[in-house]
Image (cartoon, rainbow, N blue to C red; front, side, top):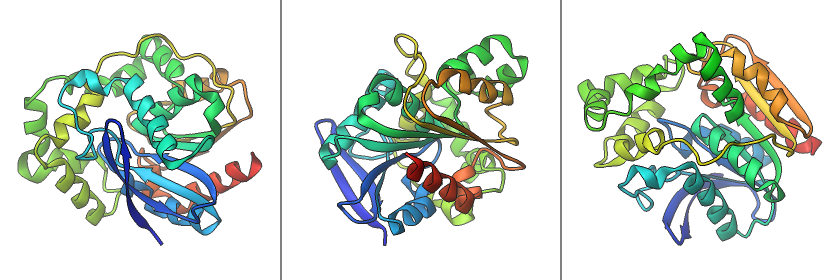
Length: 277
């Protein structure tokens, strides 16, 4: 059974959903853009039913209680700090961390900078940041896939374009692979005053300070062949940026929206990974 909880930290209150016994092994799930914690509904239930304590927060900007206005306040250092704030408030000294899309990027950085806090790492869709950075420098295919990141830097007009005509542009991002009622919920959330700007500030915050090196935490990376944003070059290079136990799972004929497009296979992969470590 899914619970709705609030996680009160020094930067504000994060809305979250949770499942599983309170004394179960802790797992934190991080969503991506333009979604919310609800993207993990199936995996939350599956892991909770298997005895894990699973929490999925609406992250910075997506939770109304943590929605700063300046783009700089969405720097990766703040997003990683939020992960630790949430874990500390939940009383989790060590935990398993799972992220998709932007949540995957935050998960990689957390694993690299605070390995002592994580039992395992799972990134869905998102390659290691160094692998993606190398692809952006040398791979024309990845450069073309990532042109939207530059386009979304334009404040105001980007929001207007995305929300026009009942948020047609946002709805089309999902490639008809996410349930309609879930898309309606995401659009409703992002239509709230300031919500879409806050979500886009993740892209506008600027590059991280420093570079992320290899990750030593036991890692599962799940990538899909039809992902329009993240190509194979960075996906295949990611193994070179993990020094701990590593599993790469490539899902054929699936798009970027793996948690909702293939909820059961992903839950099975997560359970296998968690039980192995």
